[in-house]
Length: 214
Length: 214
DNA sequence: CAGCATCCGCTTTGATACTG
DNA sequence: CAGTATCAAAGCGGATGCTG
Image 1: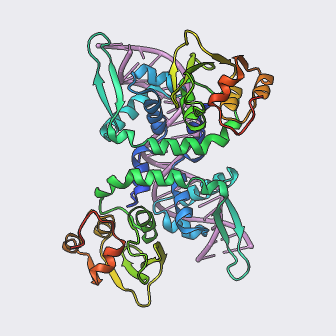
Image 2: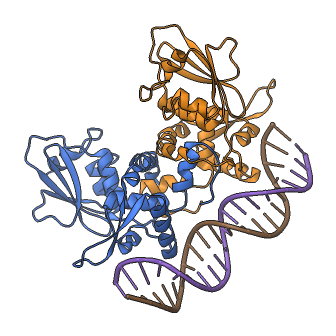
Image 3: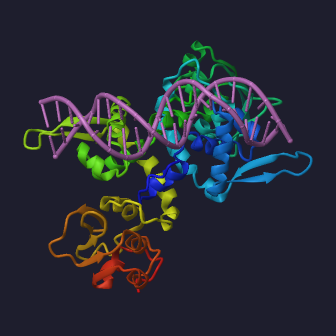
């Protein structure tokens, strides 16, 4: 990116991460941890492959990411954030929070990736029953199944199907996210095609109080 | 800006404010409050005038700024942030904080505007003697004199010269900022051409504890 | 003068094809 | 898997001109 040539820390930050796609690459590495080139591409639908290569080079030069050659069993290159790159989390978080009201507008041509659920899960969900036994809610939306785990007051989102989920949630990204962000009740989400199997109390355990589950 | 077409709040935020210059325009309005077109231009050295006009139109359409026709005595258009625009403050702040380490690298062709001091002043300075009488420190660097006022534990930065400043600080932006951010001692700053007049205790009142004033 | 709009050369991006 | 190569289209920067 062409520098703004301003002696101001905001301008200087944007000199480094203000380029198109750059902060979305950082988002991917924050959400997924160390990733292969191909996985980054999959998590960044719409990016041109040469641009991804360019940006990765620039990010490496700026000290934000580093390459790591994985040992023989994997035998591939991993890209990971450096400590300085991790420090961009407040920037990505602030953007993500500011963007939440924009999530009500969506169009059918928008792509969705299941691991992006981590952002709203971190923002909206809480374990409201830390003293009860752990629960797992399977979430089926987007490209791969994910599971929300609530245990000891901590929440976690992981990829993959659960063996014996306490509940499962299936549907289009928009109503599923509407439900998880407290903007839709379970009934409203169902009317928008969401299927929920399990005790509503399981879902209520992780949802904010704003909206009744019914 | 071309949309990323991703159903993710970070991508959607960047769809709106990810364009070149957009967040710097927001920075100006956050730092200066409602501003005229000409003042925005002056605070954004390097922007092409048509781009500023384009961005202002886009920001207005996105509900981030609004135009306000000032009454006859001024008789000009003011641009101001809406409530939604003010909510970008955490984004600009996060970028500004992340960019602070980049401020040690500077080049002679970089522009500086005095009101940009507000950002580091808010981040670094504190009133460490809230019970003592107010003090004013005049700061002479950049395009116009500014003054730092410490009173009742509150800090303020305002444009304009002070009538009877308790101290005054004059020099190039880089060492002045180094001093105000605690990276340079007063002695080091002086060796880099900074002139300080007044009791060092006045300066020590607002500086963080990290570095001795001597 | 404040607040733009137009024009033009250059750089960046996007889409696709191709390679070690 | 992890990129490069190519090329058309869009965006940007700089200069200049217009209008109340």
